[in-house]
Image (tube, rainbow, N blue to C red; front, top):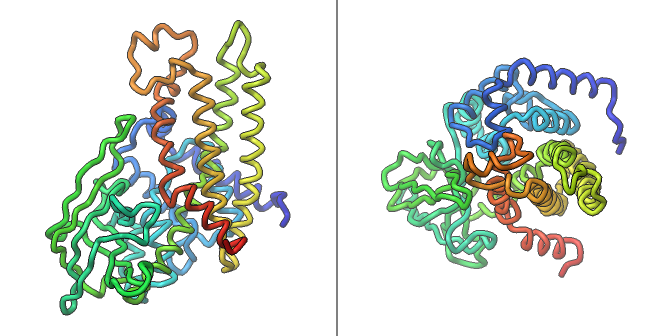
Length: 395
């Protein structure tokens, strides 16, 4: 695999960079740099801006509204968006459900649902985890019992990210208790306005509100809303999680965060000298940078495999583990560099007494706390290590 960018790829990078310069608002950039919670309107506006250029669904084929990019173009786009402090594309419809429908959905489902994801009519969220079934997803309890042409759903989902903005949710539900737990799961699409659904917010450690718990009480859903065959949802679930784990790796975001960490180290002083001259601190930065470069190469391999239709295998699990560990390491180093300036709930008194407190650093600790979840969701890192061991060594 040639890791050098071609002239055409360099030209594409320049095109993306110019587009971001022309279309990414200063207001959104300021929010991103200050780690503020973006509103639904902010995210929808950015999605619409990308869609106006046909750049929203980067991984979709042209015939379904995607740009038809290859693996390298997708990688470049991700890097440039992160470098420009652009918002993350909300992945649930575009990066999760979309690929699932393209592979497992009926032609009717594709024709009805995919355009509504692209134009922003529908905002999807994910109903996978439950209070007793997170990393051990196959133990989920939410039931869907057949009643004529409908399913009747009862149960609970949790950690539903951005569910407060969504009007649709895709869920894993138990349609059979026979055989192995994985054999009785189905994948269904649910309208959140359906009677019997209640969404409750979960306030996180750093004070943010981005996740929810969802309760289903006698929720009636048409059987036609099932994707794939009944009791074969586990295959779909694994396919979707491969896309989610690659997204969680966040190569572009970590690259930008590392660049900001280096600039911060040059600003902050310890005993009269820039932190960037501290050999112990900079050795940790260098170790993280080496890991990030190795992950960047692995990510390109993963995207290339996906583009040619090859299964990613254990690579998505590897990316998930390394990507989350790297991002958490960068967060931790930035927090240590800032010291008390990285307070999660800054006051004027605290900030006013600090020699170095760049505005964007004030909520660094909040970002640190929030990103502790990265190594848990999408299948905890412990589970990913088990997957790698089983697949590679048959253990």
